[in-house]
Structure formats: C-alpha cells, structure tokens
Image (cartoon, rainbow, N blue to C red; front, top):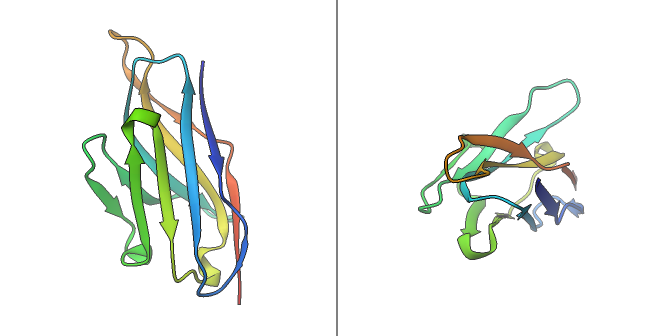
Length: 121
C-alpha cells in the first residue's frame, strides 16, 4: 500500500506565499520522480513542477521564477514553495510520485487526494 498525503493548501491573497508538502508513506522499495500538478474545473490536469530523485527539477512556464520545488529523499517528501501567487494559480493541487513497490517490480504512478489553493484578488 502506497499513500501520498498532501498538506498546505489554503486561501491566500494575491502576492502571498504558500508551501505545499507531500509525503509518500506505506510499503515500497523506492520513490523516483515526484511532482505537483494542478486542475481547475473543466480543464485538464497540468504539470506545475517535477523533480527527480537526483534533484533535477523542471517547471511550467507559468510558475517559473515564482515556485520552487525541493525534496527530502530520506523523508520521501516533496515541497512546493509558492510565492507571488496570482488568482490564476487557484486550483486543486495534486502530488504525484513514481514508486517501485518491490525491488523487481516496475515503477508506477501514485496520486494524492489533492489540496485546494485559492488566491484572492
């Protein structure tokens, strides 16, 4: 069983900051890439940022320079520091992780339940 538990979503004014956290827990062998996606009603889920277990990250153009992704491999946790938030950042943010359950199994994607971020103008 693998669980991704997100936290940190909140209501914040434009220009403010939030920090999202996502921890992978349960029984597994290894966590590979981790990342954050977001979704608004009627739209497809989109990548916000992702990071390899070696620390290489990539960002959506819309958040470059404002969001910073980091991870703590010892804690199987990924953090998304969001600054200079805009109303268009309002969405449900989902954590995703590539997890290998056993040494000889394949990596597969697991998703968190989502955390709401609302940015008021």
